[in-house]
Length: 159
Image 1 (cartoon, helix red, strand yellow):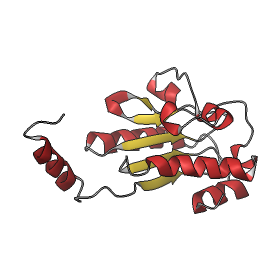
Image 2: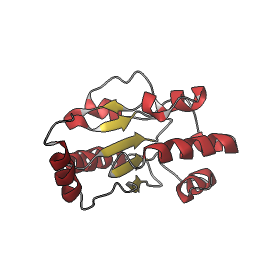
Image 3: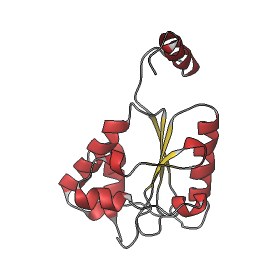
Image 4: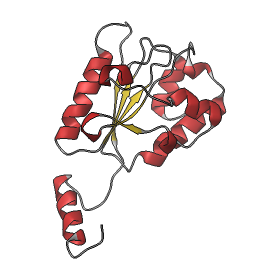
């Protein structure tokens, strides 16, 4: 909205978030070597808590085999991160809104390991994350159980 108070709202938002300029989002990966320990519940509740405090949060369900963030929110997602990768869609196409305005990307199912894909798929994924990193204060990654070389490479940013 562009009115007399637009500049004031922008300055208040900048002070609320501690800066006059947009910065790259802080990232947090919730990961464990074992399944069933509560990673998804923690990721969702932590994301909602940040959202309630006024931060802009994007929650990624990176558990491709058994993604459940949308299920925990009681939402049936039309598209998932798998659709984005298989169709080379821009990330904005699969970002959806959950409770309290929380932005999220649903995980897929049926793929045993996202990170065994070709090198250029990992580069595409990283490029897509980078394209939205300044639109959010926090990017929260709810990872599947276990750790692979591809997961490590992804988080180092050199997939």
